[in-house]
Amino acid sequence: MKKTLIIGASSNSERYAYKAAERLLSHGHEIELIGKRQDIIFGKTIDTEKKAFTDIDTVTLYLSEKFQAEYYEYILSLKPKRVIFNPGTENAEFSTLLSENKIEAEEACTLVLLGTGQY
Image (cartoon, rainbow, N blue to C red; front, side, top):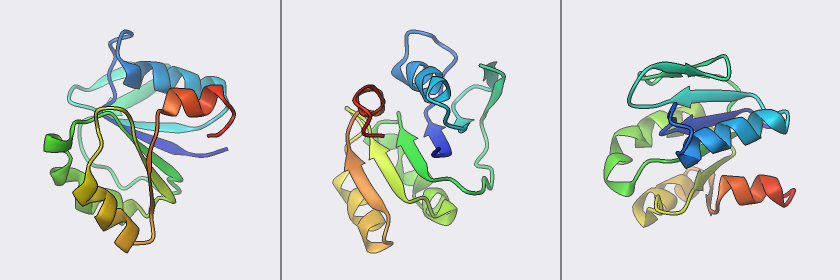
């Protein structure tokens, strides 16, 4: 299973980041969460600080491009295998930076990938 960090996590059940957390867990993936507001969902804390998580396979973004720059170095430091840019989070500059650091940048929807067995 792929340990996944959701950046842009939310406790609002209407948000796609919330649905992704729920679906990742139901598929047996371990998750870590970073969001604007600290909260707890599915027994996991939504952190507001950039923690030094280990063994992150995938970072899935639910954060618009204009808010991503402050996470560039942090995400690179985690050395994930890939970063998923969910719809509305596409970012050519960051995608290039990831590729230069041998990290796969994928424009996709985490929910669709899970639903079709491609995650």
